[in-house]
Length: 277
Image (cartoon, rainbow, N blue to C red; front, side, top):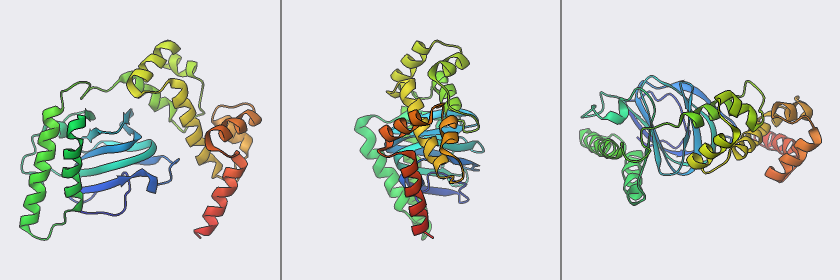
């Protein structure tokens, strides 16, 4: 079933839905709140990155990675940047064979798709995203392609790091992107997890390609943009919420990463908002 919404996430009511995903169509610095689907969900990225949260476990989805989410589990997106790919959900009643391991795990499943098979995966999911049910024949085609997608995912599901969630990364992301509290320095998160800052850096660099400090900067920038859209919130309070005691230091930090001062960013958001009224 084809959808133009491009929304990265939501409660999908139909027994079979596959959508093209574009997180850029959603405000790039806003988190996407939790919802629950009765079906077995998946997310496959071809570019960009997403940090998703499932029942308190935070996961980084990178290009050429599939995330499977068991039915009935709460799912939200904490961070997204340039996420392009596909998302979907399948009810057991739709599937000809519902015994696939990837959709019946008790926890989220991350699968790395080998480079040689990425085009094949895009071909399968692109066809499903474009299909519409017009008769039993088209439904049978969708079921056959879905079976191929799930069977393939099962076949590579135990290769390399697949099926394993890095607990240190998960706890770090869960704490770092928790918007109910301020953002701290790296040593705070290392102490919270119970490891040294150097060990935290090594694990994150090996697993995500970025250091803890880089992820803290990303969280600060994205949260700053969200807070700056709240016109009545003083910039000094924004600075404090993202971990800066000095407003001028925060302004320099923001300009370095965003190319403009916090005040200019706030004004640009206000202008865009008026244009859309």
